[in-house]
Figure (spheres, rainbow, N blue to C red):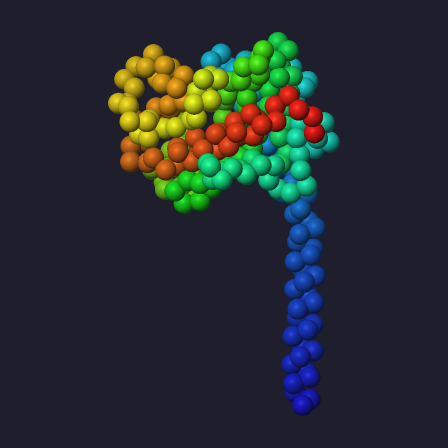
Length: 239
C-alpha cells in the first residue's frame, strides 16, 4: 500500500512540475507568437492594398496599423466566434473580423481572411475588395496557408505568377462566380486579352501554370466566392 502511495505522490509531483513548466513556456512565448502573427497579418494587409499593376500603396502609409489596437479600429464586421460567415455552397468560411479601409481616392476597401477546401485541407487566403458607385471588384489576394497542399503541384498556388491570375476580378466575374478554367469547359486562354475576357466571366486561367493541380486553385476560387457571398448579403449595412 505504501509503495502505491509513493508512486502516486511521485506521479502527482511530476505532473505538477510538467504543468508549471508548460505554463512558464506558454507565458514566455505567447506574446512573441502573437506579435509575429500580427506582423504577418499587417504585412498581408499592406500587400492586398497595393495596386497589382503599378505597385502603388492605395492607402496612406500613415493609415497602416502598427499595433493590434490600431488594427481593431479598422474592424468592419465581427462576431464572437472564429468564423464570421460559413458557406455550405462553397464549403468555405470568412474569419472574424473583417476590416474596412478608405483608399486615397475615397473608395472603400474590404479585407477578408478566409478559406475553402483544397487537396489536403483548407487553403487560407486574404483578399481585398474595392467598392465604387455600387460596383465591386476583387483587387488582390495573398495566400496565407497552403501547408497541406502537394509540393510541386498544389503548393504552387503561393507563387506570384499563379496568384496574379486572380487579381482584378471585376463585378461581372464575381457575380458569375469564380471558377478555374478546367471547370469552365472552355479552352485555356492563349493570350493576356483572352485571360482578361475570361476573368469578366469569373474564369481564372491557371491550368498552364498548375498542370495536374485543379483542386487547390478551386479551393482559392471557392474561398473568394464565400467572401463575395457574404459581401452581397451585408455590404452597406452596419454591424
